[in-house]
Length: 240
Ligand SMILES: O=S(=O)(CCO)c1ccc(-c2ccc(C3CCCC3)c([C@H]3C[C@H]3c3ccccn3)c2)cc1
Image 1: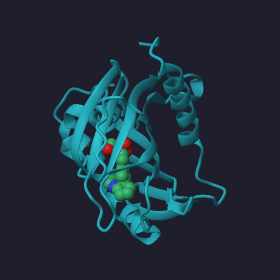
Image 2: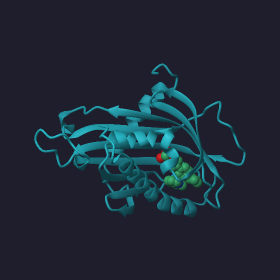
Image 3: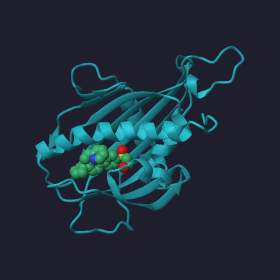
Image 4: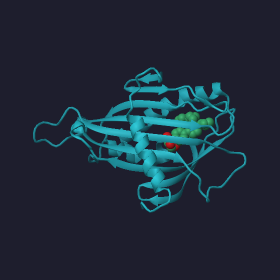
């Protein structure tokens, strides 16, 4: 409901993150650190208070699923455990509206660091093609995850809370376009994905350990997630 006290922040951050995701990776500020097929992962080395908070930006493109299907499965609590191997527990603490939930997630411990949890609102939104320039793009879908407080979140002394801002932006193209007068099939679907994240580990963790974990975990995470959606939707009618 747009009357919720968090709504102005949700709306503002979502549109800011959309702009941030759509900025290119030129200019030398982004360092390519992993490349697998169509997936390219960039990071900027950034420390805050001696903690590694390296912003990450990944670009990927996959065939066979739509932006809506990708964004929905990234946002939905029902399928989170099917693809996200980094979490041990996940609770939906609140339903702010039918497109915005508050998640509490306990992440698997990354030795030798203390175990982490993440408390964040997660908002999904369709961005209609605003101008003819998007003519070849069906539409754009965005999921924005932002750390927040919540009165019902249990506080476990042994667990360190991370701060995170994540956005997942997807755009579907009909490439190749279907034959004249033909309905599109999944072979016509090309979806471009931009995943951005800034995770502040919330408490001390060795820079070398964090950078090694990021380098290992993020490519695995994005590859596994996109393949999961393509496989899950393959036999289903296309959901634009
Ligand atoms: O895109 S999401 O919103 C999807 C919903 O789950 C998301 C993604 C990643 C995280 C997360 C949380 C904690 C950590 C670290 C920090 C210190 C020790 C644990 C990491 C680092 C380790 C990196 C990482 C990246 C991807 C997967 C797992 N591990 C990532 C949270 C949310």
